[in-house]
Amino acid sequence: MRGRVPLRDDAVSQSSTRFTMTTDDTADDELSSTAEFEIALGRVIRTALENGVDPRGTWEYRNNGTDADVEVMVVELAD
Image 1 (cartoon, helix red, strand yellow):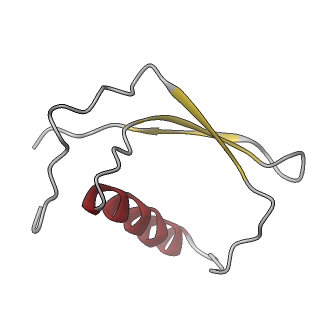
Image 2 (cartoon, helix red, strand yellow):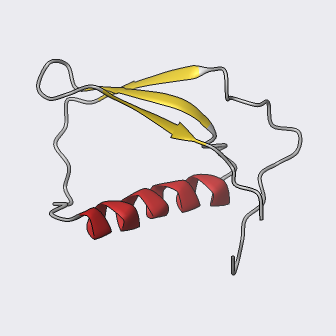
């Protein structure tokens, strides 16, 4: 992967930790396709890595009853 940002070795593994996210805001970006979702997700993960935020782990997203709640797992892949 070109320009790969490595995860810090000293970061605590978050694979067994759950993070709960909620929002009362609506998205500024309109996603109307799987391709647009993949681009947006990639942008979020890349920005996290570039800023020293370890995105690995299990993330719960709660919609406060407006839509379906989801769980997202971020796992570093082997080269």
